[in-house]
Length: 268
Image 1 (cartoon, helix red, strand yellow):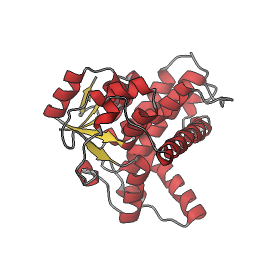
Image 2 (cartoon, helix red, strand yellow; image 1 turned 30 degrees about the vertical axis):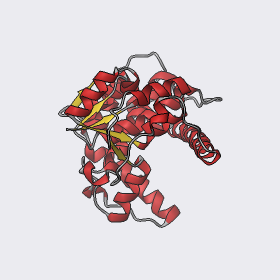
Image 3 (tube, rainbow, N blue to C red; image 1 turned 45 degrees about the vertical axis):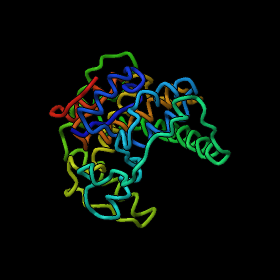
Image 4 (cartoon, one colour; image 1 turned 90 degrees about the horizontal axis):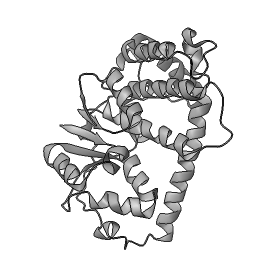
């Protein structure tokens, strides 16, 4: 069974638990997990790398969501099954990473810094889109944080089950991309649950609704680490939707996954 591993599950599990997961399933490490590990506090990074089996290819590596979307738009076909996206390389994690002895080069440090800056910018961009998402959901008109969650739950159910509704939003996005970049994405009626394009939209809508529930329809003057982590978590869930399961200890991501993939394995 192909299972996406997220940072919360990795950090919250023992070495034996991760070894067992690796022996029972094909664990998948999305690019976001690798980069999150490398940019966390040094002691946390070391703990994470110590948990993986010291073998060749302990986990399957897959590209970021943006690369998977490019695959679909360029090839005009779904990127699933996920095995097609495994990086075809033989590797082992550098043992010095688990011993706190690895010295990053200046080039590596700069690349990681650029990724962190990109994550911060991406979080701000997500928030700016999230605060206007209620335009698609009349039931959220005038909604304020800490009010009844029923309108949010109803909207999430619609996102999870009404594919015509999601394709309607996709069509608008597709038209805007064509007008701006002259890039023609696949026809809305063709995309289904096996497409990352549709799953990307579903999970982002879910995350936007969750943002409105927590913070209302207000922007943020400062991007906190918590907001950034909530944004980065989206990638795990998106990739998990085209796999057999998701391993997460994050309650919000687990909720999204249960909404979108009730038939799949949620390991928490």
